[in-house]
Amino acid sequence: MADRAALADTTDVSFDDRQQATIAAIRSHHEQMGRTVADHTLTIQDSIDRLLSPLARRDQLLDFATGEVLPHALAEEGTLYRTAEELPGLRLLVRAMRAEHTVLHDLVDRLEEARTQGEVAGAASALNALFQAHLAKENDVLLPALAEAGVDLDALLAGMHEILGAPEPGAGDRPGCGCGGCGCGGSDAPAADETATADPADPADPADGELDVRGLVPAQRHRQIFATFEALAAGTAFVLVNDHDPKPLYYQFAAEYPGRFVWEYLEAGPVVWRVRIGLS
Image 1 (cartoon, rainbow, N blue to C red):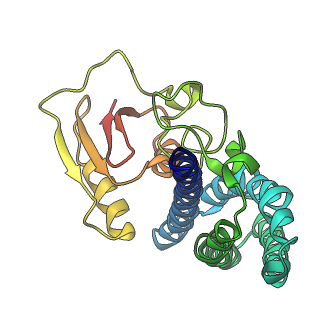
Image 2: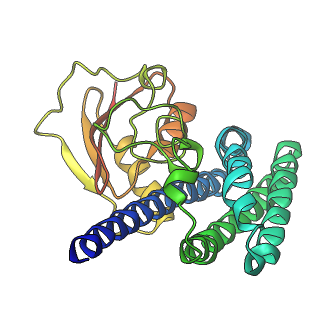
């Protein structure tokens, strides 16, 4: 009897550990996606504030929304939502969250059709606000309820990178899932074609100064980063220190300084990101 009890306890702990690890992975992926949408929205507003056309920034947010956000929503509907609908206490919640997915689709269409600065800013802000609130419901209500009902989330979502995100760096193959390399703001470095302006063979100059923006609000971060870059002399660089993958910033550099900047990841999370940014 004692042996059986010990085995049961071990099995329970193993299940709980897997359950918590899966929930943590989903929430981490949500955080990365939420940050990326927020960063894209900020670059749109920043572009308008600087009297520049926001259409290039709009297109970047569109690419992320259609390539990552909407596929993520579809994957959730076929797994988490379908399972939750079988639980009486979650049916109304799932119905509401499916409705929010429909609104997300509509807002993406509205963003694509936007042409004026006001239309672009309004659509992007609405998309960001809904997406952040939607992620909070999933993190704080849906996932705990599924876990409490005993749903094996690890088995349900096995291999679903659209929901779980990519493995941590060094965890093996990294299929396209939207975490950093695919555009979700995760811990991947950019794909090879996205770093064409960087010279990976060029080691970081130990004399490069560091710009740590972790204590700044997002709007101040972008202004400080661009001010630092614009003050560089040709052939010099600085090391950006951030608390999440600054990949949306890469796209802004690519739009404003095509062929004129160096972008090299020195450290890629999961807690700290360091990127060497130089003027070529």
